[in-house]
Image 1 (cartoon, rainbow, N blue to C red):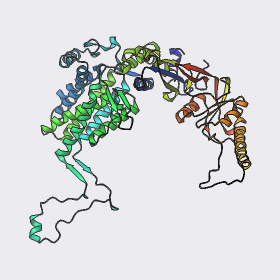
Image 2: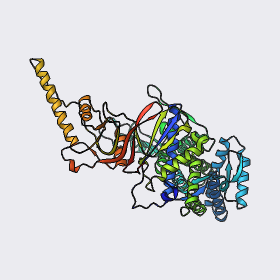
Image 3: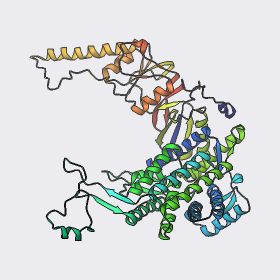
Image 4: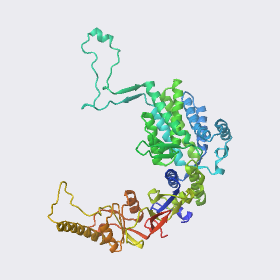
Length: 565
């Protein structure tokens, strides 16, 4: 598929072409992290195809936004200007942390970068592979405008929400039938003079076990929790960020090695309410655009770190929020003006996509092989023809070989085996995708028992069960298919019947497998077989077995959501 052809997509066109990316690696941990890294790149590229504007990375965008916000703060009278300057300082902390994580002198590099932007070198950012500042346009360090905008808005909104908190109320355990809060009568039986003397005494309106943090205590608790979350993941930020080992508490202790912010935050358990807000925000960032999960968490934490200092200087939270909102709007406008759109030029847009993929993978495990995997990701995304349906891109992980042995297969690979004595290669295939029990049908009445007086009667019952299964197989074969794929197991007897009919039977294709197969082959999953005319079959040009490493897989070529290979 040529790149220029793939750019002429239109919403009215077919949803794109399915493909499979086969990942190879020495250990399961490497494969898992490679899959997460590649998923982030695919998500960002998918967003860029829909929203083709791009901005420069390496801290360039953050420094550009910080400069605009600082200039606006200098022209703004009143206390809001102090809040706006704190917003700019939080933005400048991102390139500072990136430089710190790379082991360079962050104060010197950020000072050089600020001076460059003051000289209107607005495309300059940090080059962490050389330890200097450089022109991001020349270096090809590019990021998605959509990812950067989402990061800015999500971080500012989450920080505002946490800053507005002045009470943290923890509900009591529900250990009785009445869950309502009640006022405890602490004045009962007292004389009027005694009540007057106690009129200023605190009144507890909460049930026993409930807890409340007020005003500065609540705000301090929120700041501490949110900043701690930011400090936890900020060492993973940038192209030379560090990894973390996550050890599950379950029996066996599954080990995960990653520097993906969303993965880290999903794995940890937090009890602080403000920390939970940042964790949820990171998950939303991951779901929406697939990348920037660490950046959005760190930026929100840095904003709250600045807010803590302003609160100590007696600035009211609402004043800070008002300044932040003006700063966010100014930063958003600066980002929009700096964005470039090359979607009308296929060659430049292709280069933008490759640069975005390389930039995204630079901070991941795949950084040393980013050119190889960037091409894989861009080629896979271009096959979607603008649909953005990542379900059509199947990723298979196979132990063995090295990461550079990973490749893109222009078909659909299913990690299952074909039944015994069945055809191993089919052309012009009609596929019935099902989720039905293909074991020997049994009496399913709770507590029922069958008593017989001879082994011959047992044989008659078994024969009756086999006959029921044969009738079911016959109903399936009436669909005119030559391939049957089932989500559940297929036992020996029905497998034998399929083999006698020359039908390829594939069992135990799990939920994800059958859903994706239905998508790419154009079929529908069915569980009943009495009305063949109502069942939508899947189609493909060729099904064959292929070997990857030491494993045999099934390859579907020329699927309905694809081309003839």
